[in-house]
Length: 354
Ligand SMILES: [Zn+2]
Image 1 (cartoon, protein in one colour):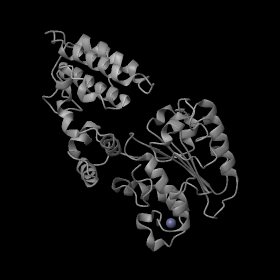
Image 2 (cartoon, rainbow, N blue to C red):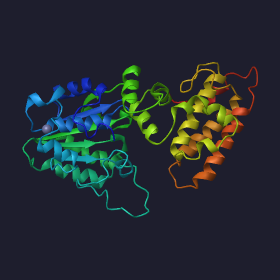
Image 3 (cartoon, protein in one colour):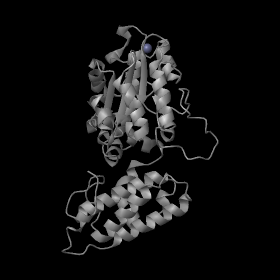
């Protein structure tokens, strides 16, 4: 994952990093939209706190990238850093080798679906970790991402440690949905809000990483640069993006055969969102104006509900080819139903995300 191996923060995280370094609280809660770098900032902070290098080698107060501590973090084997992630996120975040006391990695080769939760056993291990003394004398850091993936038992286990903080331990929790956390967890953490970077800054950063049509891909990802880079790495071509609604309306499944299923479902949700907006007289959000045509609102509403349901299962190992064809066929039907005049307002029955 980008950024997690560099001692330097992502450019739009420099300011939040400096805010975080000024905090004296032993527990931080980074919150904001997904795809702006919550996990990256958590690791950047861990590197900064644990760094053993001289201050003048540490730009913006981040880790130096050259000392033993920074190298150990790069090798995922720092004895004073524990990273708690759901099994399902480890690989995509470049933290595949557990090496931190969690059970992760032990299921290699098994067919069990990786868990999307941060399990109570892992939180218990983290609590014990926080209570032992620092091995290298620069404190201990627990990174927990995303905090909303703890169930109530896991959250309560963590809460006890947050209430009685061990001497040298620091906690960095991050969440895209802080409202879903236990209020007692929130109240024991110093909150630090991350916002979407400026469009031009994020597009320039993407361009520098070889992303063609960076601005278009960034817009497709709702302004979230790390998500845009992930899409780019999955082979999704931004030049295709403005044509997607028309391809779907023609039932062109071939263009999407190589897409990861969760990404396709997410894209269909965006097309449906914009088709509903346009059909209700509002501007599209994810696609350029004019690329999404109005359609019959009830048909779109039914399609939206189907996509919400499918989205919950999109990571299941279904036969991808058949699934893609069926998804594209539903898209074609919903998008090609002509709008019925005088029926505006039906969109109220469908809950669109903010
Ligand atoms: Zn260092």
